[in-house]
Length: 153
Picture 1 (cartoon, one colour):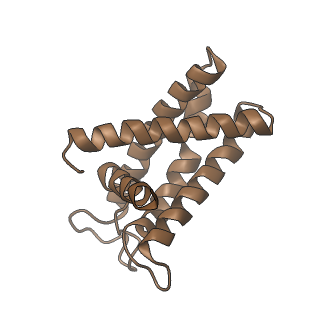
Picture 2 (picture 1 turned 90 degrees about the vertical axis):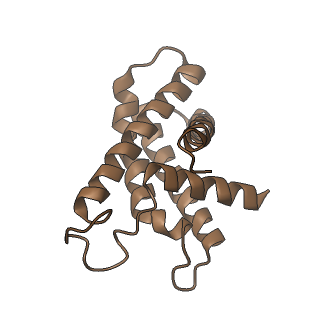
């Protein structure tokens, strides 16, 4: 089960560009194909759009009619966390194995998502946890479908 989750999260990170190793060295600002500040910003924008769409779908499913601006307000937080920590789910970093890295990325992203969801949607703990898990489920299903569509899995 854990291998399926770690493989799925790693493939999601690869399909959305989240796992770029742009932060791997000090040459983040240097221009090179597939790396650098532009690639990092592009990955952040794509991840933000992806999280906004999936959160709005989950919120509409769970809460009913909600404005799309709330999802757009929440989406940059988990996108930023997943983009900055994405390399931990794709490669071994220091003493952190790839499987532990996937767990770190998922927990940190879900925590950031839950914190901002509770503020923006003004929810108590239980509804916030349900909406966060629904958002994770919607993102996983849509991410797997997109990864299959683009041949990443």
